[in-house]
Length: 371
Ligand code: GLA
Image 1 (tube, rainbow, N blue to C red):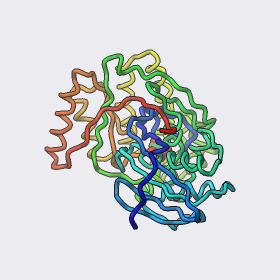
Image 2 (image 1 turned 45 degrees about the horizontal axis):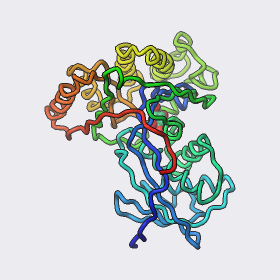
Image 3 (image 1 turned 45 degrees about the vertical axis):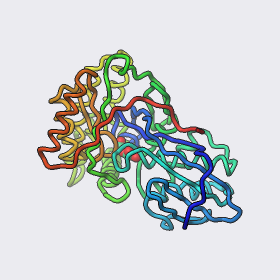
């Protein structure tokens, strides 16, 4: 099938890095991400039938389904697009058949929310042609349902909210229980620092691997045993009962301890960012990484080495970002130290015989919108 030439790109939505708050979003907790410059773009034209044809500029593939698509019809990257069609129809919106062209420079499988970028930009395009009238929160919600219920990845809502609410120069402190989003300046660039992404290229998938889903179930069980709605509602001392409450109570205790301490670290990190105390922020990165490595067990050898190598090269602190089990780490680095930090990361990966990591810096960028 040869795709027809596409109209100009109409909508774009960014990926994100998360500064603090991993696996807290589905526990009703806090997160502190920012949208990055890398984004997915979508162009759309209306058809006079019910077909939905999705063309990827990256893979040069065309996938065909219909506006009546249901979960299971489409897999792979195109499911994030078809899932949005499905979610909008589920909400009772009538959509015309469409040709959609998608392109993206958000690295796939790198833990930088390439999937939320794709589904949020698609939601904007379909909102326009279907005259749906979604606000930002509505775009995030439709995109999340596409991912949860059509693709089958049981994620929280951080990535979609970061993608729609991003602002240049600002991080987002999000309460995932109330969905309140507070923008706050991220002045690290003015203060002579960069945020280095170390994409380990050891790919992760939230839909296939069951590590993410297992952690989510463990958190839900811990909350149930403690008789609270979510782990957001407990403190560290209250977790001490867990080992006696179930056979695997010791594991659940460590999982819950990560979530509860990580939630505190989000608030603390937001506070330290406001006072521009970057050493304190970076120390929190390091503590957070240890918690994800030892208590939540979602790190990997590559992520651990990336963080250790960055710190040995002079980074103030480093942590994995995103869902884990592969993907990327982030390091807070004084600009003059960047060359040394990069060199240490490359050398550490070469010494292990791993693929060369992809290294690039990111700054807070604008959220989803028309192009
Ligand atoms: C993925 C999910 C998010 C969040 C993070 C971990 O990015 O999509 O909802 O749970 O992992 O913090």
